[in-house]
Image (cartoon, rainbow, N blue to C red; front, side, top):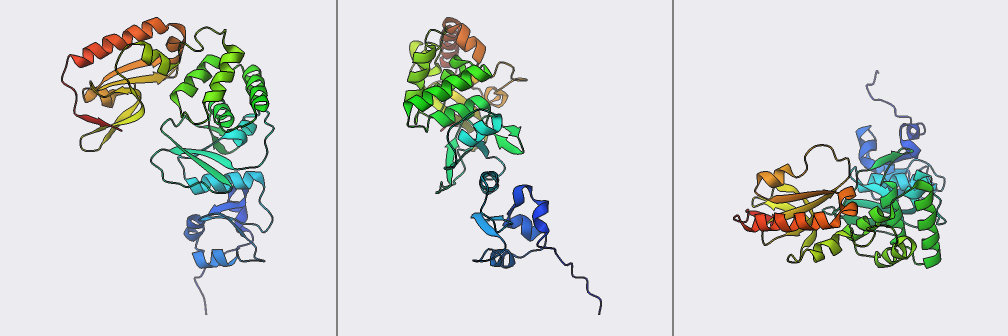
Length: 307
């Protein structure tokens, strides 16, 4: 009797997935039931579990690339690779091997780290770059995320010096990023950058947090999301003065188009500063922030909520 059932070649299925790593949901979409997939992961089976809902379609021990692919599949499309694995994909030298895969995810995501995976929730998600098929943090961010988790000063110093020199990274821009980002583990890299490149113009004085303190304005909140009263996300602010509803955005030197239009449309005063301007003319940036604050204080505070 004829049958319409499609026979799935489970042994050849792995070739459909990069690095032979597949999500259960993708396998189900191809007609394989979850119980069937997990039965193949039992001891002595043809497949292995990598992360919750992610399988290695092979019985061999996973390679580093397969573990990284599995971590990204588990964390979802907004996640990106950073740390030592990202540095290696950029071609930079790093002495570390193995250990936890370090991923960046948006701050709203509720993902837990585990033995093989370190999940860092951040409000400063950089624009990812594609390196050998992996969504990866830019080189500078990957370098800083790496050194923030290192514990050996000499190794940290060597990695900073070699990577900055070989790829012509700007130490002042790295200091700026450290100042804006997570404070966890940032103190010693800041100290090293100051010691190694402290003679560079503006390396320390153009730190955004230090510059904000020098304005004499009330204390700002850092890395906040601004929403309308109905909860609609309007935008993000690197620094936020809640008493007057003013946002400071530090942007890349070639950021296309206007930034923060949703904020300004809702009455928020937005100061937009490029990294070049921040590093080259701190006095002008300081004065611009003071003038903007006075302008913001002279009108009713907009009905927005920042967190």
